[in-house]
Amino acid sequence: MDVLSLTAVHKRYGATTALAGVDLAVERGEVVALLGPNGAGKTTVFELLLGLVRPSAGRVEVLGAPPGRHRHRVGAMLQSAGLPEQVTVGELVTLVGRAYPRPLPVAEVLARTALTDRARRTVTALSGGERQRLLLAMALSGAPEVLLLDEPTAALDVASRRTFWRLVRTSVAEGATVLFATHDLIEAEAVADRVVVIARGQVLADAPPRALLAGGSDLEDVFLTLTEESPAAEGARS
Image 1 (cartoon, helix red, strand yellow):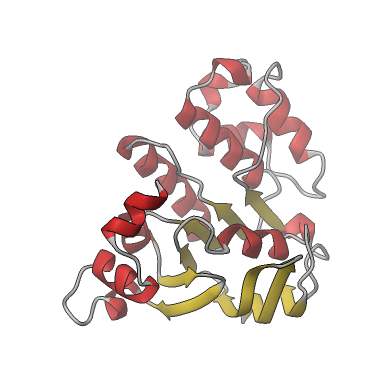
Image 2 (spheres, helix red, strand yellow):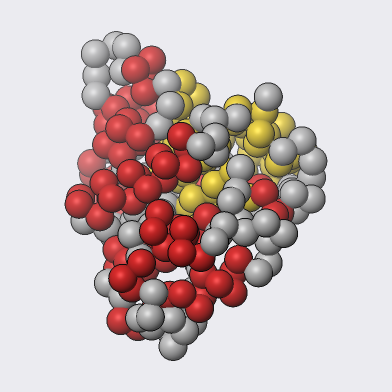
């Protein structure tokens, strides 16, 4: 069963085309990486799935219904998410949980995300990795069937990334479906069941990492070939 689906989806903002005919389906229990450079259209996909924007054309479904219909069954981490700085970790997780009909106990959420000993700390006292774990805790509060994670490990160090994905895998083991965006090739290869490569608003490849690497190249070579990127082009944009 497809838990998430976009069918022939276009999204335009005035003269700018963010997505140009995207087809994407994620089945229950999968972990799928949406891999692409900055500006590829990854965040727009998440905004569509969450019902924050509507497609200019095409169809978007979440758990078999229009986005937003089953909001209480979906947890999300967005790049643009802000946190109230003077609220404690425990207070924030409690507040978010109240928005769901059957939230997980706050103590359980904090334990799952290794934040039990940070429950009384304010957001301002957290490290970068702890803030990301707090965003994950908020996404997990409603015991979601679907996790939508938009570049959830951006700016984290290697150890923090490993901790983060270990926490996410706990939810996957319990039946959650995960779609996450990244521009980190190593992360996509290590974590995902499938890698969907997107650039210029179009899906260029959709396959398990091993299938993409069948020609003997590493994922970076495959990515650069598909997106027609080059080290020089990357340097010009940075």
